[in-house]
Length: 218
Image 1 (spheres, one colour):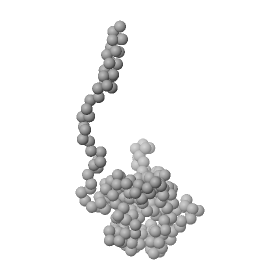
Image 2 (tube, one colour):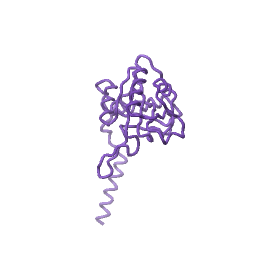
Image 3 (cartoon, helix red, strand yellow):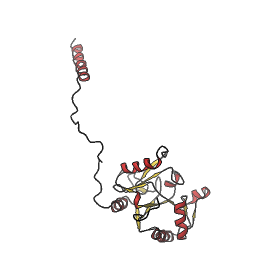
Image 4 (cartoon, helix red, strand yellow):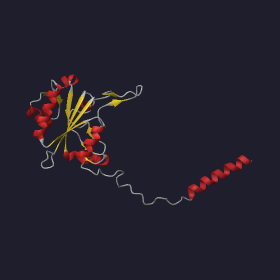
């Protein structure tokens, strides 16, 4: 009898709670404002610092011409045979630099470094946003031992929200089937807590940022 009474009391409280809903204790919640404050410094500086902390390498270029000389220096310093590049925009820059490259699927598994663009750069995180609608699709971002990203200053955004807004505006109803965030070289410490670089993707990550604040190719 006592158990039945206790059960009825509990059920009564549940019914009362369903009937008499209390007022929202926080009626003025702002869901539109950003969660994080915008970086206090320039976006390129914030991105460079965050990327470097993640183990990536950042190279600033004032224009396309400086990129051409910088990529040639990097190519020679690493004694690479050639690069894999599928995007015509960057193929033209590599040609001007005298850097041999290939875009043939037959050579994909033999490449030592791949050159790609990106959708945007997230300054706060030092993260690169890429998608499956870029050039060679998904595999170029994870397969080569070295990933070289060529980006423009106009692609810098403060945070993830703005990066996704740019993608939505760019592709509208034809959204990519894959959107990925790359934060530094691939790494894992799953095995005996030992950090291993290049476990699931590129071991090295370079980001060339070309200043297009005066003229832009986009």
